[in-house]
Image (tube, rainbow over all chains, first blue to last red; front, side, top):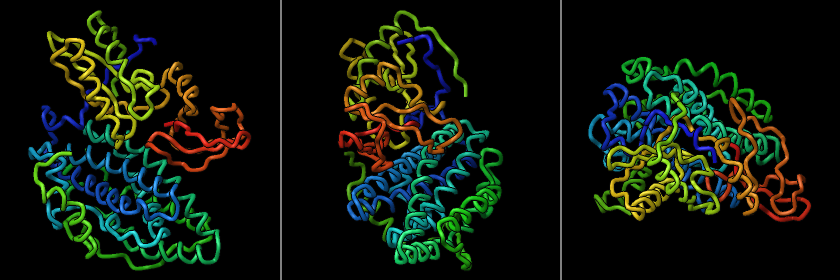
Length: 269
Length: 167
């Protein structure tokens, strides 16, 4: 082994941020909290598929995708929490519904497998474009988290596009259900690309979501049409996830996510 | 990304050699050096600092590797050991050593093809069966038993096998 080419890197340490001197500036922490919540909530929803997916390979696939997202959530929440001396667990388990900043797309109930694929398609394109842009953040920690995440969400995107085509171009029945899945998730697309106050506050450390819309529009509608499906024409949902407004299904989901940690505060396993 | 080449001092080399014996708990034929997870070593006074980089953001094996590094160094008499996780530059399977690739294949896991610059465009290169060497193989699932693997099957010898995904 050639030891001379080992790399001394910028020391960015998501796990040990809490006890290091690396502290997120307040506006960056506020911004990272929203991104961390997006990843956490979707990871939890995907976890609900384990043992319930249409085939074993999909239990594994959705579990793996969820695990990557959970990794992003851990890094982002740990970094956000560094500004307030809070751990990733404090933020994940001990905030209430109105304190979560996640976009409403991510908390949508899984529905059938096609609805989950529709949500994954929208989410993956959003994440790919977001993390690609965020890799150039002026905040070194956010840039590092994003540069790592973008490789992973790119792989997730492949998974959703392949299923979109299989279901869209499969049988009449699979086509119908894929279309219904897209129709159910589409109202939550707009919210992903709306301006929000935390973005403006964070300046060049953040990515303005409005700048990501063109790329989304260049990719997703074409993928839908290539799968023989129709781009839904449905009114956009009101949104408000970034300011803590969530759909009815969010509460029960959060209760399940938090119950163990709240029943046994401070426990480790 | 700052990535500078550094020579190891004699003390650091000794620490590196011990840390380099730690294996991936999921793929125990690979050491963290083979994987490219072990990034750097620094010795200052009595304090040893080791930087490792996670393979995938959510990979739980990283915690086990960190504990194993601390144990290995404690056993060798280093009391004050810090293991840091470094995110940048992001890990890639291109950092896997040649020795690591050979060990993987001998273990029955097809080693990763070179990672594709600029994203996950799925190039249709054949994955070689680690059992019979045939290139006539088929992907069963893009996801496998761990974050780093996909599931394949050989069309010639009919054996299923893991492929270590290029990343």
